[in-house]
Length: 145
Image (cartoon, rainbow, N blue to C red; front, side, top):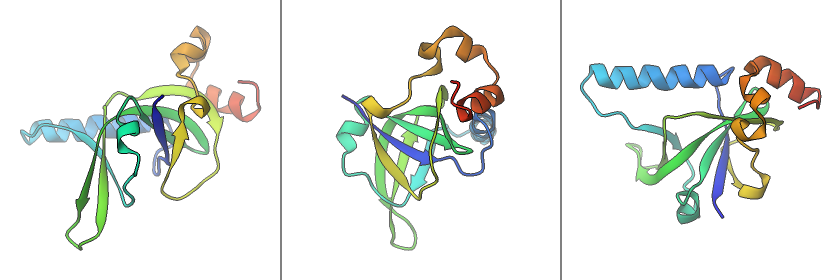
């Protein structure tokens, strides 16, 4: 069974913001003639790498709700210029909306076991996936979704 990570998506107000940021970075790399690989740098290195890269995802908390996920492709520990150990989470660029679920703020990342992960919206129901994100967010906050 896959293991996942969950992390706050600081600076994003919506899934659309996250997708725009990814598209802008990809376009910049293309203009510079570089191959694009989406990474997210974090200070702590997960200990359970093999479980995470065996089908795991990074679930993003946006504005207080688990809102989307991206599949983890690789986890690369490194030491930065100041001698501090860090980690690059290599992600698929595709952002998959999930059934919104409230989540309190926290620092860093947390492990998320598969049984506790929210389902993808495409599996939650056809009407959920077509619903505007803001409406899904409000209905979830009211406990109606």
